[in-house]
Image (tube, rainbow, N blue to C red; front, side):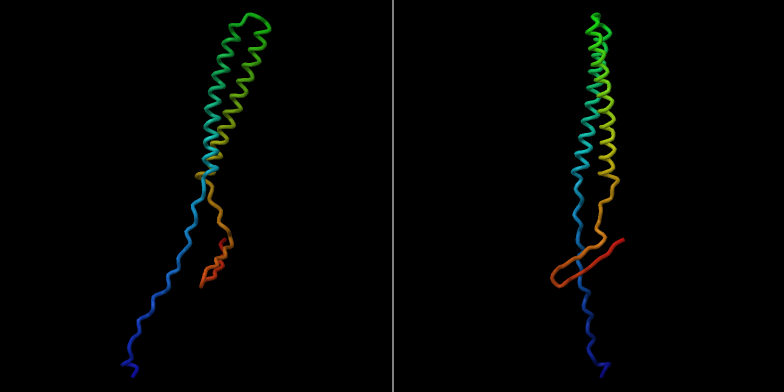
Length: 123
């Protein structure tokens, strides 16, 4: 009798849909990169202003004007340097945030759905 029994087809395994993680938002990376680029560009404008003020300082003949122009030249030069360094730091931070940092995934995940309960631990 066993030889005459009908062979039952094996039922297919149920498909388990894997959750697709949301792609991470790179908003802060782009804001940081844009701000850094603006600061670097602004540093060139400040350096140009410092050069113009220095040329005026070299051409000045009155003592009070010479001191004021020199102080303004030093101020513009220091602002240009600080702005350039800050912009470069922000550009490096933006590159890190956008391209080098890996998105954080939670170590323990609990998925509750109809007909399914799963607890996953990743390390």
